[in-house]
Length: 221
Image (cartoon, rainbow, N blue to C red; front, side, top):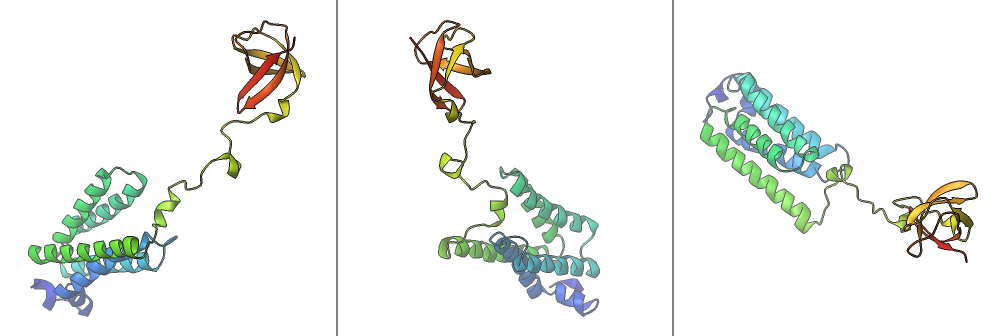
């Protein structure tokens, strides 16, 4: 079906064989899918990359694929990878379109390349469904870009410094508190909030509560 099948060495004949083309594309896409579930860069990614190289180099050596085809495939892969960093779907869709166009124009028969691509995508999609729905696997790759730990007080996280050490200490208001203002506690200027509505300047106050950056004081009668 491909005109270059009978030309070139054994490598070219193998890489451009219609059946092998389907196998290479399926291995490539499935390998990249499985790589999403592997921490770091593992065997599936390496096998997928090798299949991509064999497919591309074989068709370039056969004369069926030119520099434009190679650029389409490479740019497509780069755009798909960029989708991980720039989510939204547009970049990934562009990458998918470029990659598909490169594969379609890489072979002598546009129809067979389209059929090969559909088969490969179907196998890769089936692998993705099995990994998520059947085996219950999580995509390890995306965990590098997602903050999974919760930032709560039980884990030692606070949005602001909680000055619990100030509770019970006595100070004096530097400015009127209406209800917020400044108080002096042991020589330190502190922004505080009156427990009531208003406290005049120069009044003695006690710190009764701290909630992160919010420090509540009560006037001492």
